Image (cartoon, rainbow, N blue to C red; front, side, top):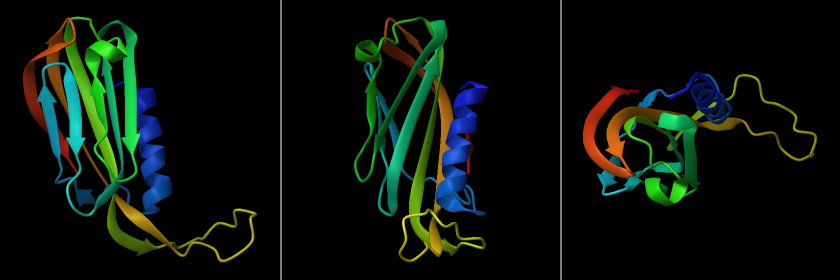
Length: 141
């Protein structure tokens, strides 16, 4: 995953999780079948984002508030041959108290809690959009 994608994902988690960025282990499942990468978040996870980067500048992202985001490499244009990297970020159902609540300018009560984030990433090889080899997640936080 390129540095810009990682920075965007980290910024999202920081907004969602306040000072507890990715403190939980992502216990969902990443399923690779044919040309599709699908995330099954599992109980207690929401706001799941799947991001994939690969050869020839390929970049695709899918999200779901309460479902299973998926990306079909062929439909998304990921037909290059080589190593693809995926990253999954999600919010857990656990909450932390915000140390410095922000005034969003909309009036009403400030959000005093945020959801704790979780993430994982891994890689796979593909050719012509078909997944050939899966490398288990290199890091789970």
